[in-house]
Image (cartoon, rainbow, N blue to C red):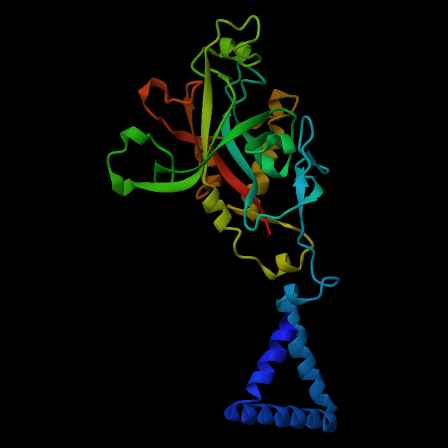
Length: 336
């Protein structure tokens, strides 16, 4: 197509007097350059270097057999986990799929809380690391849903229903209470998606009852006296996607269709992952208590996952929308 366009343009240009002069000048300059290089072959070295630098900085211009492969693949989600590698914290990829440029396909986040699932009487505050994975790139049966998995352990394996894009007002650098925000100078609108959990045991029940109900469903025999709710989480996808729009030279040369973006330092990220791994230690002594102040310093500046409890029909509980911080996003995975 380009060849036909160039030939047609050349034929038209030959009929214009001023264009004929330009063509003649370009031809004479080209012949003069060839003669100069023929008499001074050493000039090929800087020319070759300029071409090499240009190609190095623009690998996408190489022919298909030579340019980096940025094809995208499905995230291989198993029945109980989605991770592999020596430490059990590496995403596994499977079949090829169409890429969604800059789209966020997975989000890693951390939170701090009591491990009542391990010990109801424990007072330690432990770091948990979890992953939200877009169902569109993980499983055909999970379209318009998100998978949640625990990192380092086969614990959480939930499906969240994607309710679509929306805008929500939050307190700056936090979540806050939507109806209690009075000073609009301290608020901001965020774009993102809302995702809903399935029925969960009401967190306002006493720990023993909550722990019992958490292993059932509203329709399971023996759980008639449990109280149920759903959880809504707001994920700021545009903010995360924006971090993926720029690509380093190393990423452009890498044979990968996935871009990884950290929202905190590598040292802080590695330390949080170590704490999250120790959360699942068999011994209570090996589970490291983390002070809330120290945790806040580790995750300062990271994007927030905001959540609120809602009724089973999705309506706000108690007639108000009460948002709080669910987790801190430490890493995002995007399509190239």
